Length: 132
Image 1 (spheres, rainbow, N blue to C red):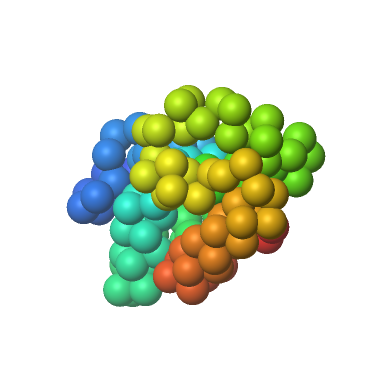
Image 2: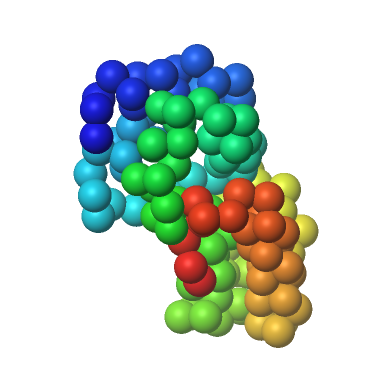
């Protein structure tokens, strides 16, 4: 991948400097996952690629299936440790509105909420998002 192509990410609206660094790093390293809580940035990257910006399309091709949303991380935590434990640490989740809404002591309700949100995000950004 041409590093100059990756530098063009800096011009995309709704991509702050930190997300540009994350996406650049992911695009330049073939096997790394990119974990982010910034859904606006994921959407902006996808939209720029859909708009036909060649350099961005190349980056999206490299990142295909390797972007992980914070909701996907919490889904894994609930599956592994249970919703009760995750719910007990909910004050730590209050930085994300979706997590604040869907994290509940009931595992089934929590997973249903997370799955619904992840499916909605996947419908918006398609191939960027990592498989569950």
